[in-house]
Amino acid sequence: MFARFNPKPMDLMRRIIVLLIAVLCCAGSAHAAAQPTPATIVIKFSHVAAPQAHKSKGAERFKKLAEEYTGGRVRIALYPNSQLYKDKEELEALQLGAVEILAPSLSKFGPLGIKAFEVFDIPYLFRDTAELARITEGPIGRDILDKLETKGITGLGYWNNGFKILSANKPLLRPDDLLGLKVRIQSSRVIEEQMTALGALPQVLAFSEAYQALSSGVVDGTENPPANFFNQNMFQVQRHATLTYHGFLGYAVIVNQKFWTGLPDDIRSALERALRDATPYANAEAAKENADALAAVTKSGKTAMHDPTPDERKSWEAALLPVRGRIADRVGRDLLARIETELSRSGP
Ligand code: LMR
Image: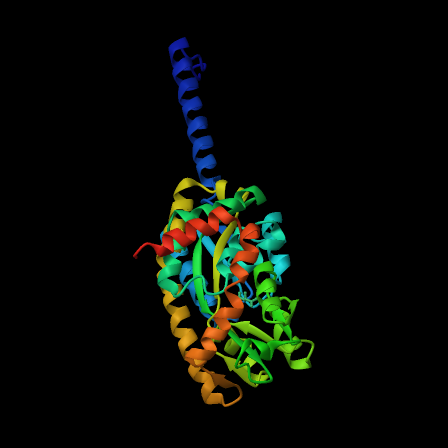
């Protein structure tokens, strides 16, 4: 005879509790097993410079440091050479959130409605990159970047390219030599005013279209630092260049604001640190590349490089210095005065 299963009430209670604990544990571990590891954040960084250009090297250094400092939680996908977007489109794409990071030239923010950046285009305002650093690395530079917030963009910092040379298919010894020439420029009203002051006819064209326009004769000349002149093969289609170094070309590293503020705090600070640490490298590469490009172009024999005599230099300055007064209202008189005051202090 089998004893009938007749548990005591206490046994039954214990069994139910054990069963409940087991179910809860299973559910807990199943839940834990289903937990995904934090998803990798993919950040698209688009720009218009050539893959071998210093902007690309800066972007690669930023990528390496960003991925390292975030322990692999972030992956930076680089898109150089206008392969995703050209000048104007890339800013629109950033605002729409189609890309997360850009490094456009400071001369390209006017069409967005942020004119203050064009202060960096004023001819002969800055003598060297040390003077620029006093602005870009201080409160004035920060205030200019902050103006982007109204456009859904956050400015993280500045990168240098260098000072610009002028080129054409005829010698440009003095300002008059540009009279009537069609010259490709970036979308900056200050640069437009500068070319008009030289008697040239400025034509705004995307960077990716500049070589073709020069080579087909749509435009006669252009300006850019030697690194861009070399990397974009402009030297192949411009027989003369003059080392006027009349204006600066630099970049703002910018991000989509919504994306940026939505990042976890630790990721955001790691990315800020990566950019801070990549910037001196990007700037050093720019200086080196501009020097190397000048040597390479000279060696190629394709473009005759002209270094202005002191007298010729004075004639360029005389033609271009009045631009400052004409565009002061556009870039902001107060901003310009702040920069002039800062630069007039004995520095650094
Ligand atoms: C240009 O359009 O000439 C430059 O801004 C391109 C660049 O990004 O260096």
